[in-house]
Structures are given as C-alpha cells and as structure tokens.
Image 1 (tube, rainbow, N blue to C red):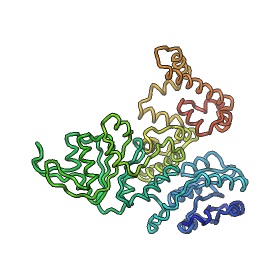
Image 2: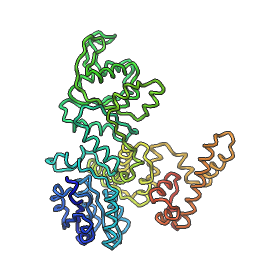
Image 3: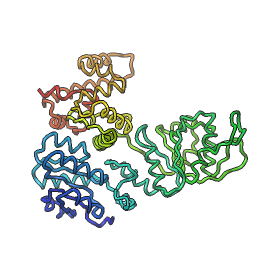
Length: 476
C-alpha cells in the first residue's frame, strides 16, 4: 500500500458521509450491501467502515460481525441516530469501535476522523499477508490496540531472520500464540516445539533440552535426542525461561553461541539449526541481580524484545474479545448466546482481568455453559467471579458499605501499620465516598458523573467495579 494513496473509509448504507469525508482527502466509496463491500475490500484496504441505516438489530449485528471477521484490522463505526441501549450494546458486543447517535453527518464525520487519527494501522501487515487466503489476519491474532499493532509489525519484520526473540508479558497475555505466529511466518520447515522450563525437574532439564546417550545416568536405558534436535530446522520456545536452573544455562548459552549441542554423557558436538524464542512473565533483571540468571545468556536471548501489554492496558480489546469469544464458543457448543445488560457490560469493561486474555476466554466459556440464553446483570458477573476466584468475603463486605467504610476508618488510626498502607486505605475511603456522592447527585448517570468527576467514562466504570459500587442503586 502506498503511503501517498488516500485513506479509505468504506460507507455501508450511509452515502451522505461522502460529502463530509472526501474534501479532507479520504476515499469514501459507498455500498448498499455488506457482500459488495467485502468484494472490493481487498483492493481498497479500508482503514474504517461506517455502517448506518440498518432496519433492526439483527441486521446490524450480522453486518458488524461479518465485517469484523473478514476485516479484523479495520475499525467498524456504527451510525444509528437515536439508537436505543440495546442497539448500542449489540454493536459493541460484535466489535464496533464506536456508535454515533447524532443525526448530523458533520458530527459523525468528525468522530470518524478522530478515530482514524488515533488509529495505528500497519500497511506492512496487509502487504505481507498471503492474499490467496482471502483474509487479512496476522496468523489468527487480532487486536484493536496500537501497541499490539506495533508488536505485530515487529513480528513480521523479524520472523524470517534467525535472531533470538525474548517475549515479556504477564501470564495469560498470549506469549505462546505470538511465538507460534513468528514460527509460521518464518518459513522454517522444522517443527515448532514449546517447553515450560519451570515444569521440568532440575535433574532432567539437560536431558530434556540436549538429549542423552545410553547409560549417561541411572535410568538412561536408551538414547534420547532432546528438544533441540527434535526442533532442528524449526523453532524452540523456552517458556518461563527465568525458571531454568543455572546448571543448564551454560549449556544453553553454548548452544546459542555455537549452534551445536552435546548430549548428556556424549562427547561429540552435534550441529543444530534452531530458532530460539524465550518467554517470561518475570523480570529477568531481578534474577540477574539475585545471581540466578546469567547476564551473558540474557543478552544472547534479548536480541529482539517483544513486550505484550496486559489486557487491563488494552481496554479497547476487552469488549471486542468478549464478543469474539462469545461468538466462537457459542458456535462451538451450539449454545444460544446470553443477552447482555448494560450493567453486565459495564462490569466486564471495568474489571481489570488479572489473568488477561486466558481469564477472559475462560470466563466467557463458563458464562455460556451456565447461562446460555439468559439475560445477564451485574449480579451474574459478581456471582461468577465470586465462585471462581474465591472472593466471598470481599463481596459480602461490598454489599454492606458501612462495614467496608468502618474497616478503612479503623486502619487510619492503626499506628502499628506502615504509613504508606494507611495513606492508601485512607485515599480509597475518600475516593469511594466521592464516587458514591457523585452518583447520588447524578442519579447513577455514568456520563454525567464522569463529567462531574473530570475523569473518562472508562476510568469511572473501572473504579466503580474496583469498589463494587452498583450504579443502579442510585437511579431511583
């Protein structure tokens, strides 16, 4: 894609936006049907699609779902003047970036421009994608977060090189999926092999990685080739590399430096051609300072560094992935998707998901298996979290604001505790009281409450979820 070509904003049933977008240099082709838009999409490579004029929520849901599935790197904006909450909820659950409720085409065009200005699309992904597949995807990985797009671009640029890669990220962020994507992009003919370094006993790690000859140690009744030879010509993922014992780190460093391995008990150096990817959820700098990880090995692994942001730092992905998992798993299990209320969606958006994408996917799966076809409220969200995260006592306190506040007030005068703990709890008490007061003043209207508090809507919802404040208690 040439950087000099105009950015494309495809218009589905809202041709009146052409006059607003084209004077600013956008190409804005209009279509009456989703199918005709998709037929032209490979040529146009649109940065956004604006969907409008849908007669009912079912048509809207189908169109947005199809566009998000076929054009995963294209933002979908819904323009439905005066749409009700159900329509907005439907659009967001299917993956729409925004829903514009104003009737003015000028206002809508301005909202689209702001989305495009904040958007980081990577033409390299489309240029390097296998066009014969008929889809534009990065090896099945999709995200609406600009940091993830940068990460995808780095993967594409480095996949075909032999450089070692170090993937940093919390548990559940998808480090293994990224490693697999790099392998698929690399063109290497050998296997992709993954090993959890923390799950292999220290006494067996050398044999597991480098193999052993017959009789090398007690119980070695036969020779073993090891994972380096098993992945020869391919990619080896050393997951949780920070847990590998020091006894194996010298062998690993020599293998990376020389491209050869020596089986335990053997005498010959065996050449191997392996692309090594290491992943960790802990800070290796601290392990180096503690003397449990070799600094020279770290620098040998840290040629290309990929940092996977946690889901809480990718709020634009939460509802998008929630809808994606709900659709995929409902199809897989042949179950009707639950009907999601505003308050349930607020709770999903406001929760920090410490287990990241893995926790979100597991949550959606439990949701479908236990509440298929039901209408869900914030209480269902709390019950699921309480059941699976063991937080009964915290939820009980949340239902009794006086007990919760009393506990915090007691902490303020506890001179046996560190000052930082006392200050943190005092701040939380004040923040909770402020939020409850502003919700009471605005009768639970989130938008107005956010303006009064001078914070974003997302920040307010996150804080309400953190303090387990139910906005619906203030609406009467």
